[in-house]
Image 1 (cartoon, rainbow, N blue to C red):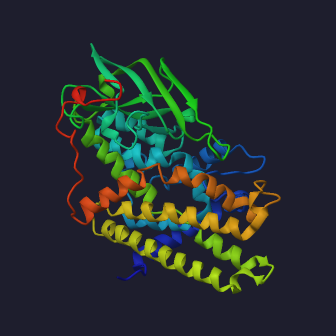
Image 2 (cartoon, one colour):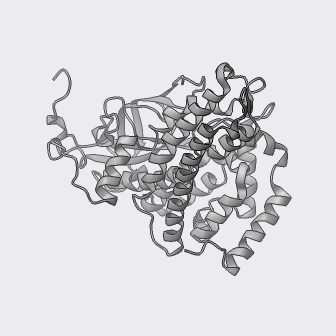
Length: 414
């Protein structure tokens, strides 16, 4: 495999670098590089405003959602040009984290299933960062079984009336719109009675309750629906075809999250090179070097696995379930690396204040955020099943409820 740019790609990369050099918000660069994982912290700065300003600047210059069609706010760029942009944007990409669900998951689903009128109305403001979208999938009773959802959508004239609850919804508390999967027919097997919609998150009957996480932040939410009305024009796909629509979202989610998930290895290597222990520099310790070698090999494997997806994109192919490998390996690796870094810090590893802790408390933030990383976008167990069944071709798990009408599946207390 040749990883060098073609002449056309090299010219595009030069154009990207020139624009970024002239327009990137360099006043935020140091803060973005030192921010803890999962949290963009810029002292004295309204991060929401800074993120929207940067996204709008990119949009106005034609650098937002590069691979989207021009009619929907993109540039019509090739998949490889999109990758080049992501490589060059570097630390500034953290300002786009507010939009990752909208740009990476909701937008592609809207493009595949929304009406042309809806695409032209909602996608350009999404690309420009004017609106933020969320994904309303997980439920308390379903766990990792998305098809086990119980939020109901019942037809009432030209509207659908929604009642139920979602959980772990990232960014719901600041989102303007969301895509929502519901159950519209409980008399058929669980995968067949689902229907997808998009909706305004300010609709009457929606209640959002942020969930307090162990790291002190509240990025996830519970969302309650009480007689929320959605017009049928906001349905995505056919009635009862919601599972197929959701797979579009989930495949894009794995591509958005799994392909570029950080492990913390570069930060750990730099930290070990600078850390002085009682026995001398940490990097000179054989046990430390052995750990670093293991994670270096694993990180390299992730890099070249991601290149497989890039190669597929360059050939016009759609990346498949192989993207699950990235998240399955990167999530636990990040957790291991963060725990090791705290061990190296000794008692100082308990410090959470970035001004007092070594490495600006990056690894503390990483460790506290890592359990959520291994759940969001598919748990480790779900990803192992996907890889086993769809990549390795192993026999599927036995699912005794697969063909049973949903309303006949036994539940606790029934």
